[in-house]
Image 1: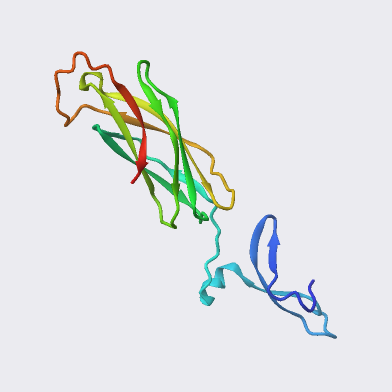
Image 2: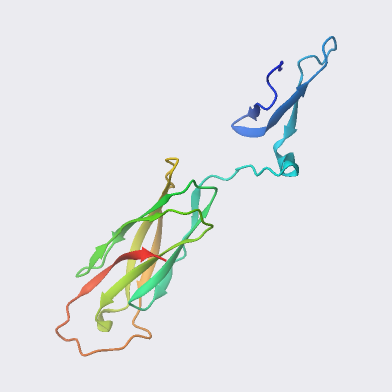
Length: 178
């Protein structure tokens, strides 16, 4: 049922959007106050996009690469409100390594993926090494995506082997956004 002034209002049912009110039945008829609405799937005819997907991380591929840095792509669905902060934390860091995460801001609106660089700094003899990373996104409207775990493997393929018998640096971590 609807009445004067209801036009343009949302039509919802069972936590789903069905459309917008655009009219009602005529006075003095059995359909008086019956609801007439434009279905959501017809909004595109008006040039309107309906946000129907939740903002969440859709995938983060497991990656492997050579030092000094490896690109990691964070794919998302939905329509976040920018700026978006990406939080990268280390779930597992091999013994003898120092691993760091952090938060990166993405200030301008952009399509997926959001990318960052992961760095590995070690003697090639200490490679390959694998890290488990947890990533989440937080948009300007306060929506935080569920975190997603993924794997980064630093390999020695393609890097120069040096005589670094005294080199005991074993660091890895978030470098910067790409």
